[in-house]
Length: 407
Image 1 (cartoon, one colour):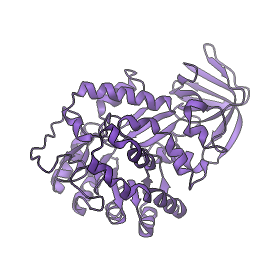
Image 2 (image 1 turned 90 degrees about the vertical axis):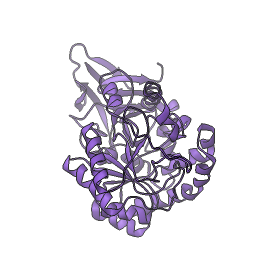
Image 3 (image 1 turned 60 degrees about the vertical axis):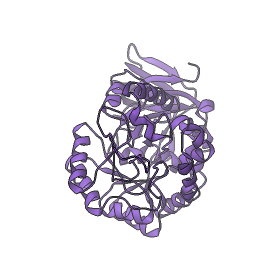
Image 4 (image 1 turned 45 degrees about the vertical axis):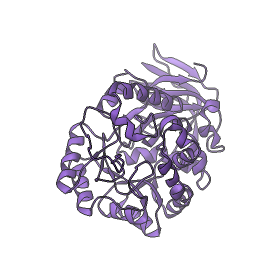
């Protein structure tokens, strides 16, 4: 299959400059760009009449299995039921312009294979399997009165509980055995977990290093859920590649990000959405009260990180019916960043984090032909990306038009 887009404004995200011309896709890749390109026989040609074209978006922190904000319920749901919800959630992400997502616990090789084989429509799925949590940690979703913990692998859930460096090592190896693109560890307390504190640190340094060693041995990396500077700094010193959230980082954290060439993945929109709608979609009252601890700090942390030169990737971390707010993250980040920098975090930045530089998040020849056709310039108005229902004309994934405004 070949697709030729004529008369477009093609954005080079790295330079922030547009070039007028055509772009041709073939065999799922960007085949060529330039003026007056020839259309081989059988090529579908679309004249864009000067519309803006940007790379397909990458959300580096999603939970495609999270049909509810009550994450503890997922483990008791039928895997078939969870998969059906996941297909719906992933289809919505694709229609919002996200052609690749990095799932940060919950999704597995089955969903990734189903998407790759065309059984479900949705973004290309990079997954970690189940996140690793200590007893009483962020992915230990038992209440105080519950004793039994069922980690059997057949059923849905966002985490598995492991204690001790050897157990962490074995669990990391097991997720890598199943094809994980990265390993997720819970290095601090969180909002959705019932028995921990936001300001706690989780896992010993030896446990964190065990996960990092196993990921690196497999040419993969570790992403760490962490909020406070103390938790973030421990994780960075242990060799973690990306910090998820990081709402309470300090200047020492910024220095460590730079020293270790690590990434920060802020997820501002989830706190905004949880505060507005969390209880409606299953968030417990005790978890809802935790939101205030990190809500206002997130934008301050983003500003500190951006000013300090920390490498950033776009993430949302939305749950339940709140997935529909995925693009609102663009507006929140634009309060302290230029539109081009926010877009870079959702394209080249996220691609580099995932080890897919040159393949994703770019319109360069040879890259996956994932791109968006927009009515408007997102560098002049971030609302063009924040409101896809109004401005997103076409979504192209692997060289095929998979969503259109008039479809």
